[in-house]
Amino acid sequence: MPTKHIHISLCMIVKDEEELLPHCLESVRGAVDEIIVVDTGSSDRSAAIAREYGAVVVPFKWSDDFAAARNAGLEQASGEWILFLDADEALDKTAREQIRSWTVASGCDGLFLNIHNYTGSGQQGVTVNPVLRLFRNEPEHRFEGRIHEQIAVAICRKNPQAAFHVTDMIIHHYGYQTAIVERKDKVNRNLRLLQQAVEEEPDQPFHHYNLGVEYLRMGETEQALKTFGVAKAGIDPTLTSYAHLLFKYEIRCFQHLSRWQEAVDHIHAALELFPEYTDLLHHRGVCEEALGETVKAELSLREAVRMGPPPPIFHTEEGIGTYQTWYTLGRLLEGRADLEGAVDAYVEAVRAKSSLLPPLYRIFRIMRVSGQEQHLVELIRERFAMTSEEAIQKVLGILEQCRCYDTAVQLLPDISSDLSAEMRGRLSMAEALLQIQQGKWNKARLKLDTVRRKKGELSVSATHWIERLDWIEGRPIEGKDQLTSWLYRHSQPDTESERYQQAERISNSQAVAQNEDSNVAAGTAYNGWQALGLMMEGCVQSGKWDVLHTLVQLGQGQLAEGVYPLVEGARQEAGEPFFGASDSRVGTSWLVKGLVSAADHHLEAYAQGTEGQRDRCWPVVQQIRLDLPGPDGFEF
Image (cartoon, rainbow, N blue to C red; front, side):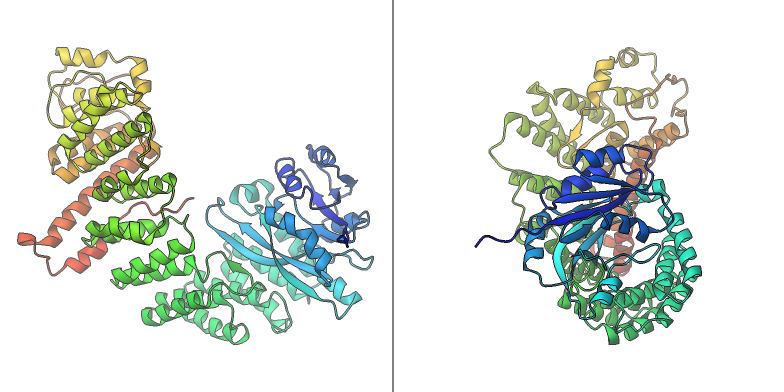
């Protein structure tokens, strides 16, 4: 017998959503039978876009009431089930394929889908919240609430025995990414409507709860805590669906205010009600660490990873009970100087989410600082499954940023041996740059000379780098590289010599070609500042302190807008003296990296003491080195 076809209506409200609406409507293609779009006064192409997707557009005069707008759409819907989305949301591909079978098989009145909320820049992970978004279409099923409108109350009023089910279907929500929030002024809009709702229904705890969330989002933590207290006093936590989240937000307020013991006390009370809520154990570990109770903190975090993610009825954050908790445990163990335990925790974090970068940065940095870098290749090959060239190149890039140059060079052959001549040239160039960062000038020259002689697309870059090495080692230069010529003019007294004359005759094509310098392992193009950074690192590693001092002085001068020559009589040039010179942000970053590298090198030498024996202060110096500024893999 063929499966009965269940008709599903998508109901939306929109206003000026032409940028996001196509993505939303494309995500439901084939999953719904009709689309009802309530337009509350768009001045852009939102209505036209909706019609292009076959939607029925219902004009509606906005009255500061989301429930009223939602209900205007429900009046037009003919489907047996209602799915409601916002324009800044998208139905996951798997959910699109499953949604009809869920409605056919379900004997429920409503189905919960998991909302994945992307915040900040969208790179900080997601929060996961089960929300009732799919329900049977009945005349009595109408939304209630001026803002954060609800449908469950009406469903339960019609049928006190109404049943609901939490599915594993996902809706992606992008509306709380920083750029969208600022553009649409969502916080102020929500705050105004919630304050109005509280005035109209002062005894409705749900309004106070949502108002507290907005205060917390605005950074008004004391006001948020007070408002959450009002909401908490008005609910029965054993019967209220959002009670667990109310408790967690209250705890978060205490954390923001550094009231750690109060946070722990509230966590213990919350765990009495919600013992399966992993988020509470994770946050207890964070609070206990802040209180200096690191043994307790470790036990809490280990209990959280033992439990794993909470059941789907709870609002959570991606990685709680898995990679986020493992990473937090790693940082805790690192602070206790249990570096072996920290590395194990970071490995587990990566295993839980292979695309996660911060644990890799910490692993590589720990191994280098603790003198264990020689074991890194073995650890990488045994503990991580790097089955693609892309994965290997990502790891190589992180190794380079963590200054694990020997390890990176050893891993280069792991990239598939079945390579084109072009790719082999890029790998040779990458290895040469790694040798430069190690201060192994002769080895770098051999690689660069091989690339230069093959006359490929990297030949110009190799020529430029050979000339930079000539300058570092005090050899004559030919003036083919713009950056080297700039360095030479400001560090040599014979500025009227033939060599200076040659340096002046740099063609525009050579300047453009210099921008093609690339580090394949890191996947980035090197401008002049980045090249200076690699040279500074090489000088640190090889002990060329006089050249490092020159590079730092010239870099500082350039950042001061008008490089000061190291010798009298050096001429100033008009325009950009080398590619990227005007980018002061990048320049400052690379200068700081060079200075941090030098500090790290000196600390390492100091901690080794005499005759290679570790000084008694070595553990302290090691901790200082681990905490030095450096890349951490977090994207903002």
